[in-house]
Length: 150
Ligand code: DQA
Image 1: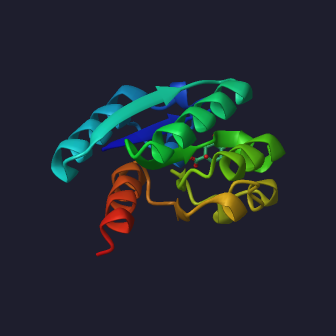
Image 2 (image 1 turned 120 degrees about the horizontal axis):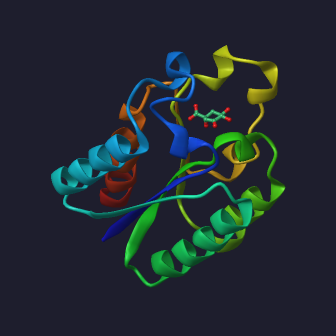
């Protein structure tokens, strides 16, 4: 089965963007870590990034159809700043009935108060926050384990 890893706005700038918050790994490094985790976990992995909210909505709908068809375990979603603004992403996750692990590289709760509220969290299957880019592999691990019931 497959896991879809979705990165939202500004995550294409990983590596140079606020390294004190997000570390020095680039998006390409993150996608390589995800591919390695996929091999280790025995799942296929596809990584996509966009700066556009509607593209994330479309991809969540697509993932919902793949999950319903039994071809996908779920989505690892780092929605970036849309986390804190997007009712549309909340509705897309619910509407598509797709298991989503909400992921943040930084500990959003230790940062500005506008990062403390997430529209994704109430619709997410679970949340991984503040563990750096290792959170991507941990989120993938979670989707596999939830599916295996172990
Ligand atoms: C982020 C946290 C968000 O608050 C921020 O807007 C991001 C990245 C993270 O991975 O820590 O773009 O989702």
